[in-house]
Image (cartoon, rainbow, N blue to C red; front, side, top):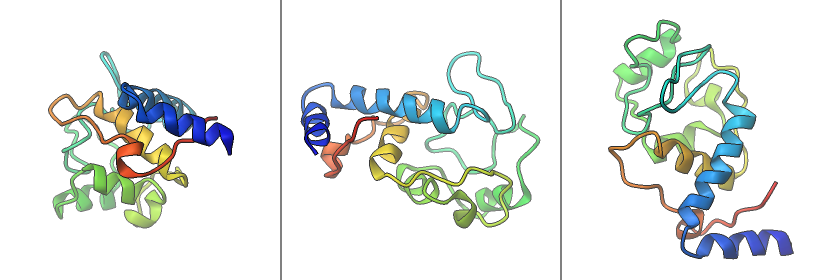
Length: 143
């Protein structure tokens, strides 16, 4: 309990968004890195590059050929990867886009989802920085 309170207090201080993004980098390496890449020089793997994800239509990276039909259809039907959409998607991707080929079971902790979004927003330069977990009223636990 003390560690969670200490981590929450640290995020309430200036630089909280940076700390959330640092935690998000850990979440990305643990859960996403095997299939997705971000940053300069990133290349598609099993999944598409996640640069410029925030604000992009689902299934729309033109040079990525392995989208499932349901993911492409979701984008064609209007699914755009906003922070809200990612918060709904990341806990259970296969339930959110039924029939997707993404095998990831999802993230269960809201603080990890918020941190991952903060991290991914660093690679979507045309959007505002993510709200910190403290701004959203969520405490961060440490690993």
